[in-house]
Image 1 (cartoon, one colour):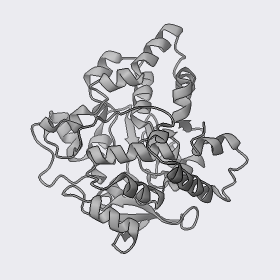
Image 2 (cartoon, one colour):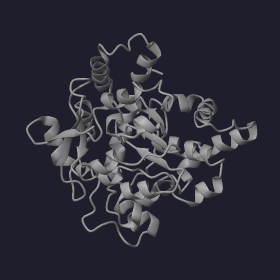
Image 3 (cartoon, helix red, strand yellow):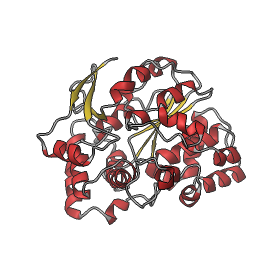
Image 4 (cartoon, helix red, strand yellow):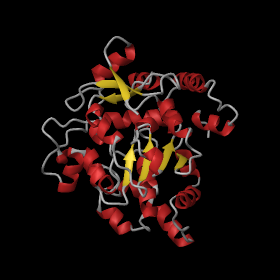
Amino acid sequence: MGTRTEQVVAGTKANDILLRDFTSQFRSGYKRVFPSGDGGKRSGKGYLLPDYFSDYEKQIREMEIRPDDIWVASYPKTGTTWTQEMVWCIGNDLDFERAKSIVLPLRFPFIDLSCLFNFPDGPKAGLDSPLFEFLKDSVKYTVDKESPRYIKTHLPWELLPEQIKTKKAKVIYVARNPKDTCVSYYHHSRLIEGYRGSFEDFIELFLQDTVTYSPFWDHLLSYWEHRDDSNVLFLKYEEMKKDLPSVIRKVSTFMGKKQLNDEDMKTLCHHLSFESMKSNGSVNYEFAVDKTQNLGLSEGDQHFMRKGKVNSWKEEISPEVAERFDAWIENNLNGLNLHAESSFMKWVAGKI
């Protein structure tokens, strides 16, 4: 499946904000990417991606898929890191020593990272050699990894490698209510993606489907439509926060792994707790925000892992803006045949 692209140019409020406040020496511009055969199927807007996606699109689309690949896919800031660590630990028989000794991006590489950032002089050679190789070309690093490969992506279903549809590698998608997603994405963008604008302007970008990997609903629904496929598992962040052991059991079954005994379940849940993850140097991405590493991406003084709460949007989004979100949710879901699923509707509205 090929694509067509359209360059994002100034002229609308959202595009003006994007090009003014969300470009840098690492990201010069953006395109709308329209998968073939998808026109009008959902929003018809095309996925917003940095210009560099075009440099790697063919490699990703034609990537050789292995049947034992495990993919974790998501829209940004929906619980991806948490899900990755859970999946890796289950798949590697709770090898916590190895999990803590190798940073997550090397165990579970983010294949489309190189589509997001262009290092003008290349990543700093002073970094550990494997990390340097990953940052230099995340696609090649991922493709070349030994099996079984654990792979992270934020790409929508339509932009995944073509062979995923035929070789049936396992795909685990994690979703989160859009209000919490937006708030978390704003803080992440300020910290590590070079966004210089206000929270209000970021909300405008989010609601106008003008942040990277948007439209939010097209992305989520591209996987939701495959939730009954034998090789796809659809998870919700809120479900993980409410009953993590139940989700671990579901993932273990999906991955063909034996169920954990009570002691191992308790140990894994502790390893995956927010407090443990935040202090774990293998997964907390402090290497990415630590200015001594001189990656040049971080602009703030926060941490990659902030709160890890459900409905924390209520602390930052005003009632008036929440009403705007609710109208946006209703407008995007109108006519999508999801209204009968009341739990889904409550979840996306941030009410459960």
